Image (cartoon, rainbow, N blue to C red):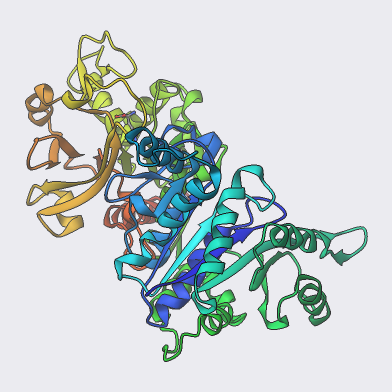
Length: 548
Ligand code: GLN
């Protein structure tokens, strides 16, 4: 039988519950336990797929095609395991299930209520992964902040589970903030006391309090928090700001967060944590030998979370190359033929990001052209790949009006067109081509060199595709479709032989990059950027040599 750890949040949002949950899971996994993490989000959307990235950051996609919260990305990156539809549940999904059951007559004669019907459905889903027998521990992160109206049924479900299950089967970890008041030169515990009080009023008592803090917690402060919040002093954990999220598991190990939870769960016989691969990665990350600058072209650049998986993939691939990856945000709306060289000056590589809608696409196309003509390593993901196809059609094939029908439904040359199966779909939620699909790679291509195998699978999230009516024209002009879906022949990878690195992929390789298994395309892209940078420096020094 599984044990259940619940992670709640107090005082404010954005404290990093996902990272704390993932770090705890990592430590338990490193001690030999089978662990998974799930996230329960209190909003009414059935999933975050219909949310603007400005609202909720990136929409993460699982193997089985669930559009989920970006915290699932952290879980996969930390644990190197796949999550699924079952790992992300929202209020919307809970109500949808209960209402559907009500319509089917499952509650015939009964008044359907928040307690017990909604809370029963929450509890059923909280325990679903535990019942598979695949996990020793299931960690459930509750989205939102304790005290929010919408998170009440979730906290109530935790209360009921704490009451129903044996004591040693549940642990509640409450993550909170200990703010530092500059004027008073003091860390303040009152907000934490209030949030624990609120949680207790809702019937749940935390076993562990993890304190986010800018300054170290003194023993006195720990004692005070323990006393007022009614937990043991060793169960007051300091979570100081870390230079990178990947340091957090080690910080939690030092604070013994894993041991405290194991003790509460009465789990014995675990191993010393094996974090050798993790530490190797951190060493490379912390002591890079080189540095490259990659331009990230997208339209949600003001918000870091919008491209979370891409930024994390750069970190994984950078460490693999012992190279620091500095990401420079490039707003495509301001790029024109006249200023493109100046806007992209200093870059060692260009990544054109996924996206939707027409804003900024002309600037992206101009930037791709510059990268193609100047040997600047180029990596296009999803919309980025589509932009590369449009650029090639316009400037090499001479199809001046070439476009995607997403942006110009009346184009005379729809080199990117709506997929057949998408043509009749009008509903927006969960209707894209989603999740993992196979891709067959052409032997001898750059993609083949990168993946080292003929058959791969990667995750998707799009409605438009490369229009195969134009494929022959593209290939005659030198562009190679080096990856295709074996069943449907949809083009998945395009590349340009002769260019140092020019690859566009219809899928999202960033979704499968983890600390222990970085995405191969990112690793090779950074390698190409490193070579580009070295050549640039060599050219510069030979030029200055010539001037002397
Ligand atoms: N808007 C494009 C499509 O739907 C690309 C989507 C994406 O980049 N994820 O095909």
